[in-house]
Image 1 (cartoon, helix red, strand yellow):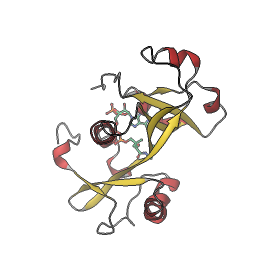
Image 2: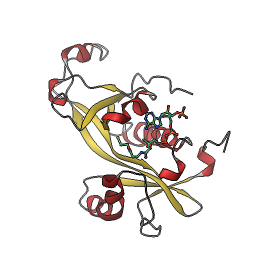
Image 3: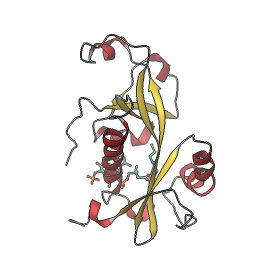
Image 4: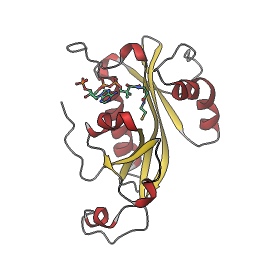
Length: 180
Ligand SMILES: CC(C)(COP(=O)(O)OP(=O)(O)OC[C@H]1O[C@@H](n2cnc3c(N)ncnc32)[C@H](O)[C@@H]1OP(=O)(O)O)[C@@H](O)C(=O)NCCC(=O)NCCS
């Protein structure tokens, strides 16, 4: 812990497991609370999304989930892809869920989770499976959280119709400097 903010040494990162009590987890968002308590194991069994828990002293204080994804880019966005021949779709991994217990918001855990997810995707996935981008469907009010880490809006028309969330991506090949 430094200046009240969590560091990697303060937490354990473990795969979804019934060893830990999930019933007390509360991130303040009903859908995400319901997912971790009722759906995460089923989605994992059906290979739809894999969930990773963030643990402090045997307590679940956060989680995130990853799924394979592919995104379309607008023409201007394709031009920014290092002279690569334009592709129909670009291989990606989606951070499909991300949550921190409400009691610990603004203590640096969200930032740590993004760093862990980027590390896993860069070092364990993209070295063996083509994967250019990390994607998220952000709640409208959480866009600034993701912008902090270099996520940008997906401009293709396919992503412009959705009003509940906003499609964003992070470029693994041209990673921005993470703020702070
Ligand atoms: C979004 C969430 C994961 C952020 O976790 P957190 O641990 O509070 O985030 P951090 O403390 O690491 O914040 C890092 C930086 O992101 C920004 N940030 C954090 N929460 C933010 C928010 N709600 N809106 C905009 N920016 C935010 C801040 O700049 C913060 O830096 P600061 O230390 O100067 O405040 C957490 O609020 C949460 O679990 N919310 C409920 C579930 C949810 O909305 N998940 C995202 C679905 S898209």
